[in-house]
Amino acid sequence: MQQVPVSLWTLVAGIVVTAISIWIGQNHTLMPVQASLQAPLVDGFFSVMFTIAIALFLVVEGTIVVFLIQFRRRPGDDTDGVSIEGNLPLEVFWTAIPTVIVLLLGIYSVDVFNRMGGFEPAGHPHSAAHVAHIPGSAIAATLSDTEATIAPTIGIGASPQTLNKPADLVVDVKGIQYAWIFNYPDSGITSGELHIPVGADVQLNLSAQDVIHSFWVPNFRLKQDALPGIPTELRFVATKPGTYPVVCAELCGGYHGSMRTQVIVHTPEEYNSWRTENQIAQQQNLNQVVAINPADLSKSEFLAPHTHDMGISAATLESLVISH
Image (cartoon, rainbow, N blue to C red; front, side, top):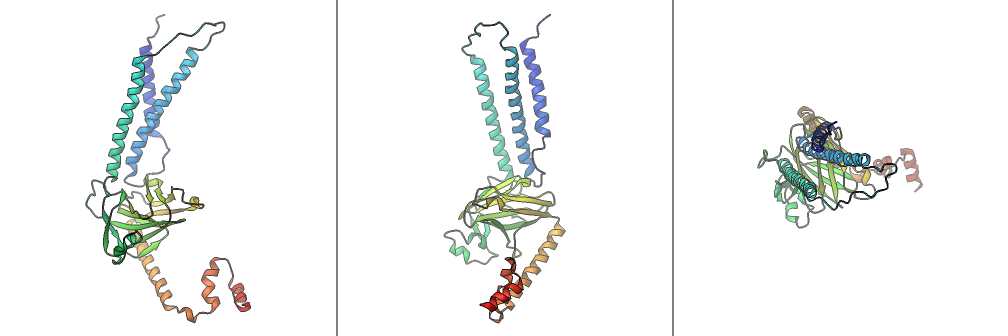
């Protein structure tokens, strides 16, 4: 019977490996739900890398299995193996192919980074409240909160399509041990959660009060460090209403694992309703604080808001105050 040429076996194996790699690389479920305009760009790049990784895995492991079977020691065979000193064409091949792959992936990643806006941040308007904490920015701190200050930034900025266009919504984000604080300069709202409307071009001005934190939203495929004294930026468009986790991805202390919050993507109507309700609520709280004179309060009344959070009942507090 005529033996099948090695070249034909290699061609068949290459076709099979390619088909399997492409199918797995394009149909995996490793990534969370896409919820931003930038997410498909990152997922496309990931799928390409995953496809290549699957192909390399199959080729390397498949070759090992074939060699284990083909060149196994037969019973009674005590002869030495064939002496092979090297194969220059093969060595050039397995050096050149990975080099080309790495170069192409590098070019692809730069293109994705640019389309996401990674090359855009250089100097952008930031609210005075955002830059006031930066060393040497005492002058900026004297500006009103509605005025803008140009501050150099790094991070993900406007995409080529939105270049030189102001963002629809700007939010100042501060990381502290161990929480995220979101301030909305246009409305004066301060929140522990990020609320944004779907489809809006959102710009986050990131800063840190103490140590390095990292603002990461897996569903948006975006992550940016918040650095003490150095403003950074994230600009994106959410595409799917819902609630998504926000995680600190930089070890920032003993309670780093609990530094979590969420971003809530509203429909435009829901977002306007949330903003109106919070503006009214914060104004009422401010009016209550201004209206109360601490000198008119008893010790128990003054301490009640604080002891309530500690689990101390009003009766217990009253008895403690009387005893002292």
